Length: 357
Image (cartoon, rainbow, N blue to C red; front, top):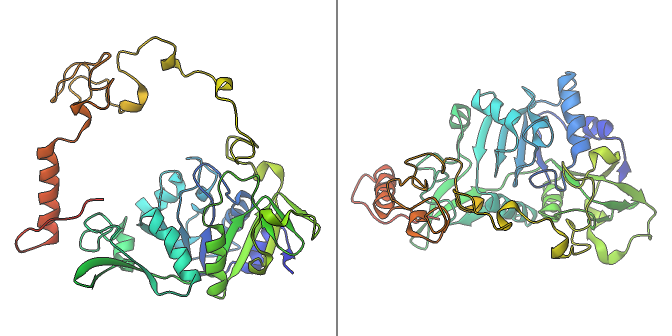
C-alpha cells in the first residue's frame, strides 16, 4: 500500500541530489502537481536540497509567472532540464539563459513516446522526427545554451536500412511526480476531474521500470472499494506515495478552480457561450484575429493592410482578412533560401533534399 505523506515530507524522503525527475501536466495548470512543486521550491530556497536534479517533461507547464515549472527556477536545484516547451516557465528559462543549468528543447511528442519506451525497457526512440531541424545534432542537437553544449548530446544521428534517423536514448527516471483527481487507500487513481490525462501511466511505468518512485498528488484520498473501477486509469501497483493537496493547489487550471466541461463530464450548449467581438457584424480593419500576427497592423508588414511586399488590402477580402489568400503562404523563394541554408550546414558536398516537418 502507498504511503500518505505531506508534500514536504514526500520531497524530503524521496527526491535526492542528482535524481532525474519527471513531472506530469500540461500547459496552464492542467493536471499539474502544484503542491509538490511548491514544496520542492521551498525546500530548495531554504537550503535543504535537493540539488543537481535532471528535470524531464513533455508539455510545458506554467502561468508565465511563478507557478508550474517556474518552481524549478531556483539556482542549484536543477543541473539539466530536458523539455518539450519552455515558454510558460520564464524563471526556468532565465537560469538557462544565464548558463546556470544545461537546457535542451526536444519535440514534445518524442518525449511522450520516450516515456513509453523507458517503461517498455527499450533503449530509446528511433524516429525521423527532428531531422534537418534545430534538434538534428548536425545543427544544434536541441541544445539551448553553452552549458548544454558542454554537457553533451541527448540525441544521436544514426543510419537504419539506408535511411538517416535520430536516436533519442532512454533516460532512467528516479522519481515521477504526477497528479490525479481521487485515489483510494491502495493507490488506485482516477482522473475524471482533470482536463487532460497526458502521459501519466507511461511516466509512472517508466519510473517503476527504472527502479524509481511514483508520487501522486490528489484532491482527495478515499476508502478502498469506493471508486468506480471503470474510472481507474493509474493502478495502485505503480503508486508509492499519495499527497492530498489543499483546494487552492489542486485547481483544474491556473485560472479555473473546476469546470466539468473542461474534463468532458458535460457539454456546454453552444448558444450559452458569449459571442466573440468579431462575430457582431462589425469587421475590424485588420480582419479576424486568428489570421493576423501581432505585427500585422504595422505598415509594410506582409499581412498589413497598407500593402506590404506581397500586397493585399487590410480590409475585408485582403490578405489579413482572408487567410486562404496567397498573402498567407510562405514565399517560395524564401522557402528555397531556407532549404539551401540548411543544406549548406548539413552537407559539405553536393546538396540533397532535406525533410522539413
